[in-house]
Each structure stands twice: as C-alpha cells, then as structure tokens.
Image (cartoon, rainbow, N blue to C red; front, side, top):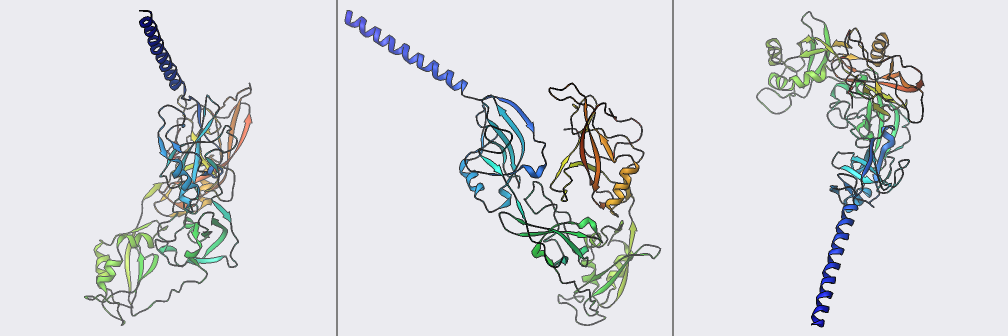
Length: 461
C-alpha cells in the first residue's frame, strides 16, 4: 500500500510538473510578440531614402516581431535583390516604425512596385541598418564633348523620363512619343549612369518644346542632325490649317504605297490616297499638333476628301480646330532646391481646418480669383506658370501655427516659390518651393471662402 501511494504521488507530481511547463510555455509565447510604439512617415528628401537590401532580413507585412506579421519576401529573395543587377530591385523607404524592444523597422517599396513591406532596420532612426542600407541608384558621369543632340530614332522608344527608369520610385515618361520632336535640337545639361546596369543617361532640354525635357538613354540620342528632305516620289506634304487659312503646322506623310498595292511608290504623281488616309489618323494628328492647342479629326469630310485624292509630290491641306479653354491643375512641392527637381521634391499637404493637424508641411491654399487656364493642349512655359502664381499671390505659402515638443513658442513654415515646370494647358503641372521655419503668429489660418481653390491637386494626408 505504501508503494502504491508512493507511485501515485510520483505520478501526481509528474502531471503537475507537466502542467506547470505548459503554463510557462504559453505565457512565453504570448509575451514573445513585440508592440509598435510609433509608425510615422519619413519626411526627408525622397532621393535620400533610396535603399537596397542587404540580404540579412526578410520583408514582412508588419514589423517582423509583431503579431500577425506575414512574410512578403523571404530572406533568400531579399539576398537575390541585394545582389541584383537591376535598378527595379532597389527600394524606397517611406515609413519608420519603432517597437517596445527598441528595434526599428522601415516600410519600403521596390522601385518597380512589386514588393512592399517592413524590413528590420537596426535600433536607430538616424541611419539605415539591418536589412537595408542607403543606395546611390545613379552615379555622376562625364558630359559628352558635343552637347547638342537629337532623338536618334523618333517614336515610342528611348523617350524622356523624369529620372532614369527605376532609379527613383515612380519615375515616369515625360513624353510617350518623340515623333513631334524629331527635328528639335536637344541640349545636354547633365549626365548620369545607372549604378547597377551601368547604362548612361543624359538630361536634355528642348527650347522648342520644353514639355519634352527629361532624362534620355544616351544610345537613343545622336549628334547627327536629322535630314528633312522631301521625296516627291514617295511623300505627300501636309499643311494643317484653321478654317480661315492660318497654317498651324506642316508635316510630311512619307513612304506611301500606291493605291491597290503594298510597295512604296517609285514615281511622282502616284495616287497614294489609301495609304495617306491610313497614316493620317487621329493619333498622328495629335502628335503633329502637340503643344499648339489645336485638334485634328480625320473623319472630317473635307479631310477625308483631301487624303483620298493625294498623290506623291502633292501638298494637301487638312483642317484643324482650336481647342476650348481648359483649367490646369497644379501640384505643389517642397524641394531642397536641387537642379534636378524630379529627385528632390516632396508633395505638400493641404491644410483643412478641423480635419488636418497643423504641421510643418500642412499648407493653407488660399482662394484666388482665377485658375491657371489656357487653350487645351497649348504649351505654356515655366515662366507663364511662375507669373500666374506670383500675380495670384501664391508665390509664398504658409502653414498654420504648430507646436514643437519641449517648446512653448509658436511655429509656422513659410514656403517660397523657386521654380515651376512647363507643360500644356489642361494637364497637371508642378510648382516647387523651399521651406523656412519661423516663430510667431502665422499669417494664415483657414482658406478664405471667396474665389476658387480649384487650382491645386494637393490633398490632406
């Protein structure tokens, strides 16, 4: 009996011991998750937040040690991106989170937008560490000996960009087709190489059509001026005129096939109306008339008749119409005043009384008497936009007063206009300002109710 009692006691203690272990284990798992104590948007210049993976940490939907974090990209994938030769595999950091354990996680997005999530970034918000490090996506290159260039093969390839593709997040095409600018002289003002691919890009300015200014792949440019010879055996000249006879633009329909055939004409006076009608579609007209403020419609009965009757060597007239007036939205940016505004600009936030917390980037956009408008698709210069902003007293913008931790002073930030982009009326453009923080009472609070505030696209974020 004593032996039986002893065995029972041993068994009971063993069960109790197992239960104790289970309780301790459960408590440890519950306590193993970290908690996010802050998660804020990074406000430094965008190009200063270009980073690359180090390959030591995976990418998660939340900070990796937080409950519910799911893996977006494995450590193996991040290592491949760290060793990648493609700029698309760089990242842009845009938020930073801290946990109660003192760890830092950066929210990043790959340049091609394929991957987005949080990666371990060390224990300090003052420098990227851990799973990412600062990246120089481009390197300064030697300027060419000849700085006047032309588009080598005008069309939809090797167009101008806001930045060499994937070297900045959301780098985009400035123009999607360079046909209109085939004969324009382009002046090279800057040169850079993509760090990973090694491809050379030039920043070019076009005095004739400034809306085409941007970064172009160097091999898409040439120092040889395009020939504009007219071949009267294969081509038809076109005058695009208004109804009252004013020539808006001239163009050439080239390498036309004879009616009923598929080969290019070889003799002057050959009927080529079918090929001319096919080539002179509305897309062709839009390209030819870019920046003029006029529109072309092939379906116009007079235009169809002129095209159908075309013969090689002829000069035909096609009618165009003037576009209506159109408002041009403006997006306002803070910049570090870099010469390359596409790299050093952060969109300002619109202050909305009662819904927006005043901060150094919450700007009051006042009502003005008129929007920035002109004939739709007609070109305007940067000077035109600056003149509008100055006349409308939008050359200086202010935030409401805001507080700063540890100070009883009132603060506000004043933004002063430094530059603007050229463009075409009706298409959103950009204006750039530099910031200056001041103390005292801000000269603004909420927008005035008279006039219009429809000129800006900035939103409260």
